[in-house]
Length: 207
Image (cartoon, rainbow, N blue to C red; front, top):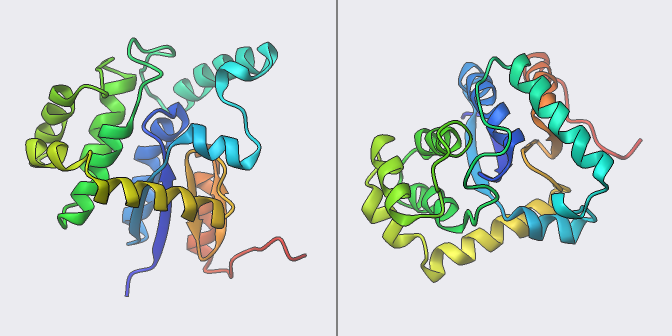
């Protein structure tokens, strides 16, 4: 049976975008079953003591902009630090991810394409027509998934992701939970890969 990993992320998160392709490469190489769990960052922050970007000290906001440039170079990416349609309400797009899973489809092509749409192409991923097109381009039935996204069924699962994140000690995006061990931030992917390759037991806070 394939080893499983929970992947908590927000399409709003530049750090999730920066790390997504590398994480997918690691997951593929290690034959992981990835459980995609999009979450609402503002809710996750408020319940775990974090602050939304606009409320952080200006020094932290300025440092974030420098870090984005550093990691853009480090990962060999080409994206806008301040894309036109950001921040955005990601509820509809996140719901498409959940709807794809319920339909037995792999959401990864849509997630990757959505990240590119927001951060590289400056698309409005809060717009239903745009999301439909992006899903179609990812090989998924865009219109069906977008139509299902606002449903109560999807909303309940979306909220369950938030509850699962808090229960797992996740407080930001991206975060991966492997056998109960949390790896937070795209700069922890190499540590995640090391843990997988070594076969070690999960670290805990009980030390």
